[in-house]
Image (cartoon, one colour):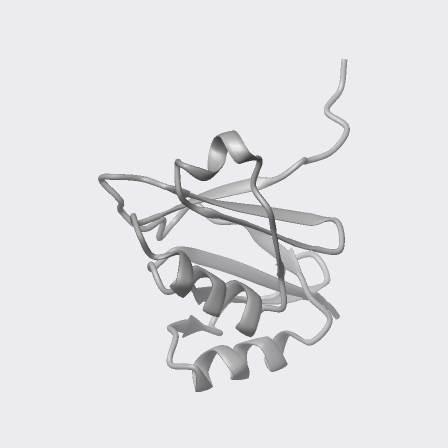
Length: 121
């Protein structure tokens, strides 16, 4: 028995904020929105993908941002993503030490969820 891969990552978001999610994940990070199955649309939230990475944002009624738990995305231009995020007015943290041959930073989505970005050195 072994785990072969990750199908998707889900993080939470507040009710009715799908447009903010789209602005951040599509316009800023470059994800593409993908349609949710018809039976799940009524739950709210939004799904995205980029290459082989799939990210689902699901509604949490008593929403609290994930300031510790986080997904990590491997990127090709870490400082480009950080700069674009800062210029758009979102919180960033570039004080992260290198890890296993990667430089890294944290950015925070419009709901305060931490996202780690890593680039191979």
